[in-house]
Length: 89
Image 1 (cartoon, rainbow, N blue to C red):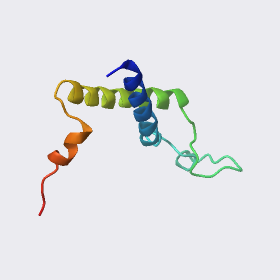
Image 2 (cartoon, rainbow, N blue to C red):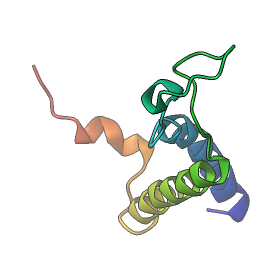
Image 3 (cartoon, helix red, strand yellow):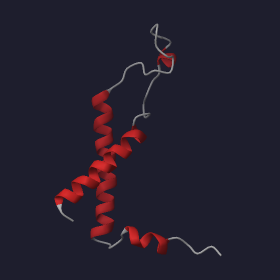
């Protein structure tokens, strides 16, 4: 795999994991009992941008290296997925 392909796959994984990581460790204004007038009670009390980006980068890197390990060293690919699933008939 070239570095361009690896970078593209990592970029896609990073964006997908961003939406999974965003709700982690989020405290709402309602949880803190300090609702700012004009905002929703479910809005984050403090949005920690850099913490979310660092956690997302870490999660995406673990998934990418796991996928890279399984494809480069063990020979798994997307074409193998139908053969992994059990035949339920």
